[in-house]
Image (cartoon, rainbow, N blue to C red; front, side, top):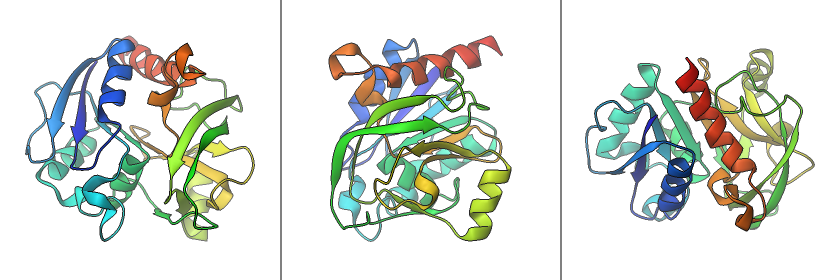
Length: 222
């Protein structure tokens, strides 16, 4: 797999994401936000966490208008894989690649801790290494992770099996405790938890490594 990790001013998880993908076996290229094209042969675009452009206006709003944004959107439109983590999830909603919006956490506090999660759907390559309903743990670190979508949109996500991950218990006010959602073709995943921060035993857990390895194994097997 060839992966492109995007860096915006204010990104702070881009290196971690690149290292985790490389450890899982991917060939990783680093892409600056002012680039208007992705490296040839890119399979996966990874949009990292952080505070792109200082979270001015709305989280991810300015990043979604960077020169590289069109290349990300075109890649997704062609059926390419896109993973957005934390701020990356916010960017993907601003790009219109995923439905809903990420709002300020309930309680208006920054949340930084390991979050118990449940795999809500494994009918996608990102979570193919897990069993549906499996309980895992990944770190979260966000102030605007409160996922919201209207009742019609939520019903559609449920009916189409596009809720990827849910929190086990209340965390940030997200509707239906949603921690991650998928696009219609299941090639785009946005998630607030950080798999790159749980990609080796020294991190206190390696559930994130399973996600990256499972994605790569699934795509190589196709």
